[in-house]
Image 1 (cartoon, rainbow, N blue to C red):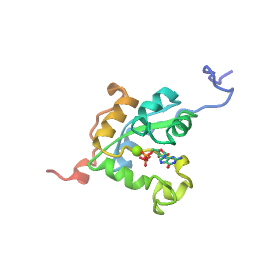
Image 2: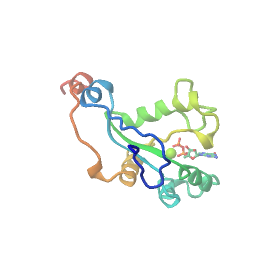
Image 3: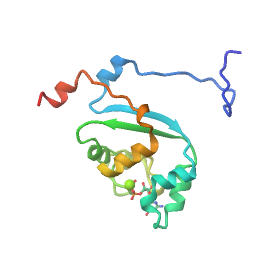
Length: 151
Ligand code: GDP
Ligand code: MG
């Protein structure tokens, strides 16, 4: 039997996909420096959403975020926090612009698909919460000098 069986996995086919260095180098203006799939615990997501603990939707948001697999990523680049938020769109999908992820793909605020840090302080806190520093990768993209210039 050549199927891999991990603890809790159904007997199902799996594949390993990797973007090779040429794909990483050619693909993106912003750099992906960390990624993992995780089902976070309720305790964990309460830390993630700690600034919302007085809000009426806090418990529901925490139940939801811990209900299944989350793809957690760290992206790097000049202005990436602000640009990430712009790409994601307004918190309420009814108010987010077409062309944004939430605007195009979500309908209600409690199921708005995607999270992005709202500023430098929360970005730092959230990266530290979700990733061990040694799991992040530092590398130079060959296109960086064309994206940023020399200064
Ligand atoms: P974000 O930074 O745009 O994700 O928004 P917030 O930090 O204000 O809220 C975090 C998450 O809580 C949002 O992405 C929503 O999923 C959820 N949320 C925010 N406001 C509401 C609300 O009024 N009702 C409900 N049900 N969920 C909300
Ligand atoms: Mg937020």
